[in-house]
Length: 265
Image (cartoon, rainbow, N blue to C red; front, top):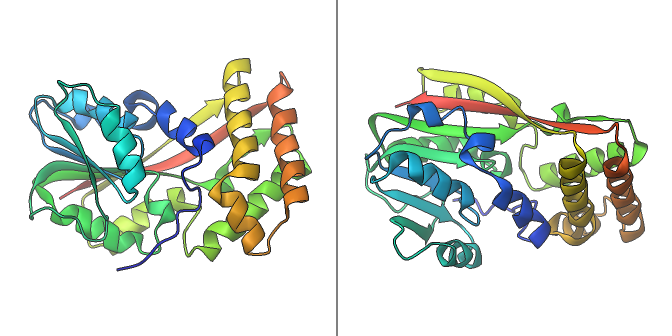
């Protein structure tokens, strides 16, 4: 199975973004299909915030979150209260440790974009989904990101990010490809939609700009950008200053478009 490299890594600046995600802001395309007593698997669960939120829609059904990182699974498990029915496990999307037809819904948020073989991952997700169930995936489309005002430092960030992700054999523009991947995986009954994150008020600008300024200089992305020879520390500090300046501008906004699919198995 592929040994994929996670472009972002697990620096706190990355996890701050993951902890912000909720069913409302990251899975609204899926929640109308969720029902009590469903069994749900969340692939690439990270620190577990979104998993726990989705679990509320299917309770008292079974919810399992998996992630490749043992440390992240430990963090997610530590966040549970004693009464929670959610379980977190170490797992690999290419080889899920579950029997066929184990879940009603298998969900992945911002996962396919980091995989060298997203089609194989979708097939494996469908394997553990019961007939009549759903495979749900949502991914950002980096080349479609839009911000104002323009800034050559942010343009440079996009160039570096695209090069790093593709050096990892990943697809940063996954949002536009998820429907094609679903079809390539052999699924005919697929609903495709799109939605955005928008950061345009002082609080959200400060949060988004601050976490990306940190990620540009301190995360695995920064290490990879330097290691691959695509940038250097001085340039990344300059790129980070572009995010800081953007966040301080009261006229600034930033939009992150996502492609979404609901695959009927």
